[in-house]
Image (cartoon, rainbow, N blue to C red; front, side, top):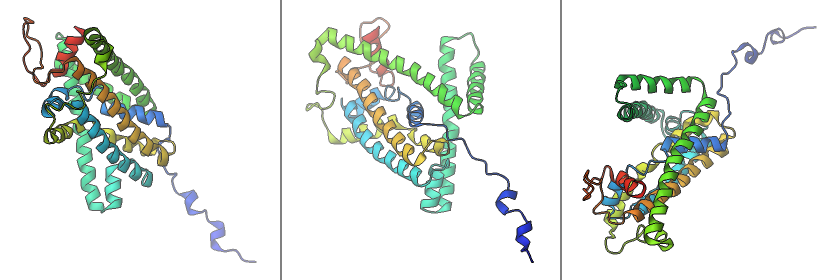
Length: 302
């Protein structure tokens, strides 16, 4: 009786090291919350002055038009994430869909983007916080935020997801506070009818397709960052379903939410040609597109 040599040997798969994989712990709602945090609930507000000026008073329309374009883009990202559920995101999509060399270039471009954004965010947060606490050195705030972000990421995706919930609540409270103040201001000034007007969407006196398309190109920045969701493909439950839903829902929610904020801002200050921070004496308004939304907030909330 004879035995084959393979009978006394271990199968190759048992002798090899076990494959290391990320834990699939994120649900659909976790992804959507993460996407909104990546975009930021207040993303449209800093663009309000410039978008309103470029579009000649049609900032809401530009945000909604940009939403249509970004939902289509999000659908493409979602479909690719379903086909290639990998954390490589655009690197994997381009590399497998077109050519590995092009994927290499896309991966490096994406890496530079994700490298610069945290740096810019840490710098901006440090500068803003130092204005609130001028006695603390700027370098101390830099170290605080960089260390904090690093520790949060080292603790894993579950801690990051929990932190996203906290950040969402904080930023949402600010947004809802602004919206409530704007509604109260408009209702007090114009009554209930003042809350329902067509002018922020279409004003025949100033409407121009060229201005609208230019404003839409700027308003598209409101949705920047949603593609970062696809880097979580290996940590999502049922990625072939949830990734597509998450990126599309993120863009839809952002569009409706941002459009509502800008709509109320436009109703609160209909004259887009004269908008800015009130002078220190309070006697006049000076044009300042960068701080236009702060002027609106000061008007409706004091």
